[in-house]
Length: 305
Image 1: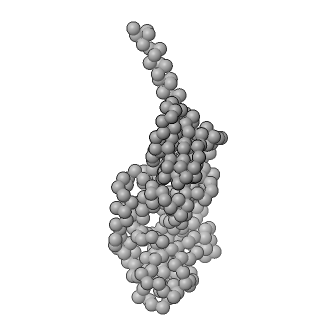
Image 2 (image 1 turned 180 degrees about the horizontal axis):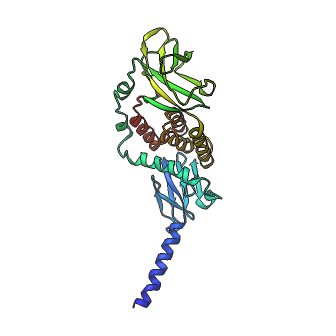
Image 3 (image 1 turned 135 degrees about the vertical axis):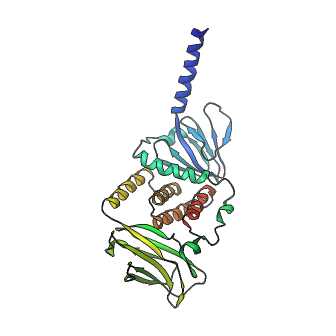
C-alpha cells in the first residue's frame, strides 16, 4: 500500500510545486469590472481583489470601466485599463528580476498599508487637529510633517492649504541661528525650491515655514529639514534609479512605489509629490487613497490639496 501511495503523493507535490511556480502576478489594486478566468477552470469568472494571485495561463477580462494594478514576481508593475481580454502570458513577456529585491520591498509596504485599513476610506480621514498639534499652524497648513529629509541636489515642491486665500505668500528658510538663507514670494499655494542651488550643509539643520506676506499672524508651523549629502545621498539616488527601472513611467502604480520609497526613507516632501501623482493617475481606485491617507495619518499631515 505504501509503495502505491508514494508515487501518488509525489505526483501531487510536483504538480502543486509547478503550479506555484507559474504565478506571474499578484493584484495590487482593482476597481470597476475586473475578473479572471483560470486555465484550470475555463468558463468560470471570478472577481479580482487585492492580493489575488494571477497565473501564467490565466486570462483577465476587463470591463469598459475596469482598472487593475498588478505586481509581478520579478518586482515589475503592470496596469490594465479599458475593455478587453488579456492573456496573462502576453502580459508576462520578458519580465526579468531587475533589482527586484529593492522594488519588492516597497511594493510590500504598499500591500501592508492597504491591509491595515479594511473599513471605508472616510474612516481614515478623521484627522482633525493632528497637523495643528505637530506644527503649530496658524491659518496656513503646510503639507509636511514636523521634520523631513531633503536631497541636496533636487528641486522639490512644497504645498500648503490656507484657511483664507492670501494675495501673496512668503516662503522662508532659516538656519539654526534664525538667519535667513532663502526666501521667495508667490501668489499660489505651492512653490518649487531648488535645494541644489542653495549650498546647504548636511551638518546643519534648517527651518522652513510659509507666511501670509501681508499678515504676519497668519503662518504655517516650522518644519525642520535634514539635508542628505555624500554617501547617504548617493545611496538614495542609486536605490531610486533601481526603483525607476522596476517601475518606470508616470502611471499610478509606478508613482505609488516611488512614494513608498521616499516615505520609508523619511523624505516626505517627495513622498507627497508622488502620492499626489498616483491619485491623479487613478482617482477611482480606493486602495490607493487608503495608502495615501495612512501615510498622512502617520506623519500628521491633514487635509487634501
